[in-house]
Length: 51
Image 1: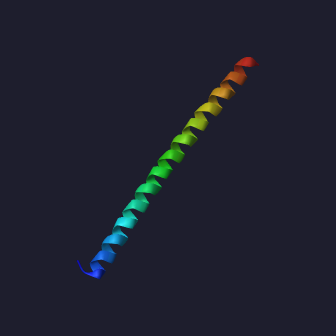
Image 2: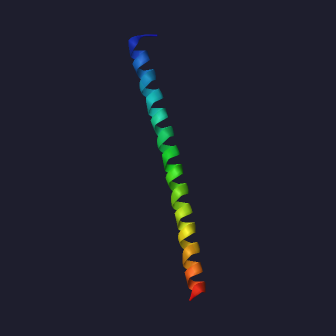
Image 3: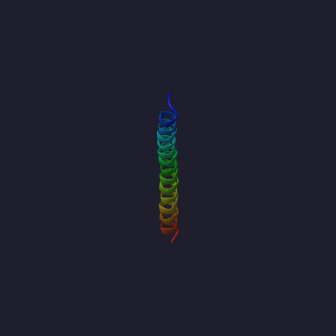
């Protein structure tokens, strides 16, 4: 493998891994936001019932 091919392969691998890690991060953030929203709604409903 020539030096140029090695550099191209490294760049492509790095880009794919970067996108993969970013996607995983967004999925985790989405799951946390969804959980917080559920918890907020549950707390609002229990506060409404208490009144």
